[in-house]
Amino acid sequence: MSSNEQTFIAIKPDGVQRGLVGPIISRFETKGFRLSAIKMCQPGQEHLEKHYSDLSDKPFFRGLISYMNSGPICAMVWEGRDAVKTGRVLLGATNPAASSPGTIRGDFAIDVGRNVCHGSDSVENAQKEIALWFKKDELTSWKSAQNDWIYEKP
Ligand code: CDP
Ligand code: MG
Image 1: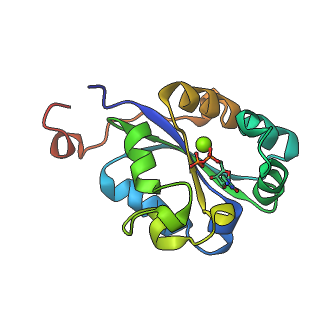
Image 2: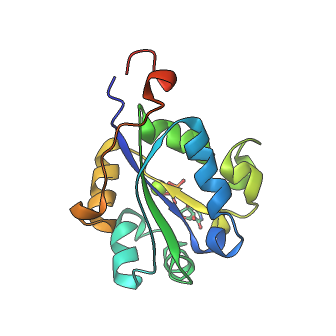
C-alpha cells in the first residue's frame, strides 16, 4: 500500500489553450495527491512519437502527433496511493462522450481527438513516461503535511 506511487499526467495543448491548467491541477490536488514535478514544454514531434510509440499503427496516430505538437503541454508527475489507477479515474474514459460527469474529460471535453489530458495506464508505463519527460533533478520528493489526514495508514 505504498503512498508513493507516481503517475505521469499531461495537460494537452487544447487544455492549456482553454485555460484548464488550474482546474485540472485542482482535481489532483484536492483529491489528495502530491505534485512532484511540473513544467510547460513543447518537446517536438520525435519526442511525442516516442511517447505514443505503442499507437504508431493506429489510423489516428498522425493526427494525434500533430495535435500534441500544436502548442505547449503542461507535464506533471503526481504521487500517492494508486496514483496511476486513480489518476485514470479522475481523467475519465478516453472518449469524452463515454466519460462520466465529474471526471475531467466528462466535464471539460467533447471530442476524442481533443480530450484535454493524458494519464499513464500502468505503473510500468508511468515510470517510462516520467523518464522520457523529466530529468531526475526535476522531480521532488516531499512528505505532505496533510498525509496523516489523507491516509489512515500512511
Ligand atoms: O489517452 P488514453 O490512454 O485514454 O487513450 P489511448 O488509447 O492511449 O489513446 C491516446 C490518445 O489518442 C487519446 O487520449 C486521444 O487523444 C487519441 N485518440 C484519438 O484521437 N482517437 C481514438 N479513436 C483514440 C484515441
Ligand atoms: Mg494511453
